[in-house]
Image (tube, rainbow, N blue to C red; front, side, top):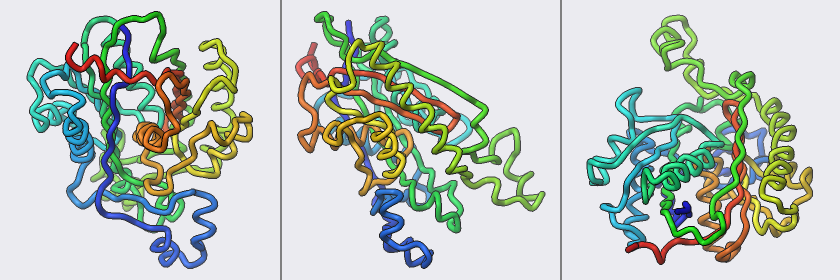
Length: 340
């Protein structure tokens, strides 16, 4: 049994924040300057009271509405988020109930950001290929906007909210590996460079407020350090993945990296010497949606005709933690196995 991606859907909140609106709030930053650095024209922002589980459920409902899978077929829910509904219970458990899935499903949350989607694919692969599950629903959703100080123009221009749902299914082993090899890495020394310092048990929110430090519950990003880490790490990840997959750089049909921002992605593409036609740099209508950027980019690439059955694709996630992950996959859709 081999694990393969069967379908991807995503959901964007209705409320939007445009670059024109931001330029009016920060007059010294023009529309042209923001667009050149970020590549983002529109960011979708979760409404008050709209949480990551709401975005994930809406994405999953779109998947079920496509009739690619029956609810009764789901064996396991994996939910990647850094903005859960509650500290406890596990948000994936609440999602199981809201989606009306059988009570025999497994369900767990995992807290990872920009590398989380690839980690989720690896977890799903392990469940399927060891016979623990036949069909896995991988959900990613984030509402970083709720962590952002409205006066912090650097992060407001980049991040948007979104949810994505990926269906993975076991298919018969035909001698090829649809999903893999994988590569992972961690350097916790960089944790301070992208962080929300209060709100957990290390520093409860009420302690920060009583100490006159309200800003500590907001997202802090050290942009130059994150950029340096990315330029140092990602080219090496690509080289190692190519070696593990036993292929050359130009034998990969499409490179889909975490959609951080336009400037960073173009810097990576030039450093690795990837042809523009084999590289995805498209976040203009979504912004950086953290763990959902890669599945959204995959779905958009498929809709644009940039993915064909059998295409070789490299995914690389990188960021908060520091954490990074990558994999090579064959874009082999498994629709014919729906009733297997």
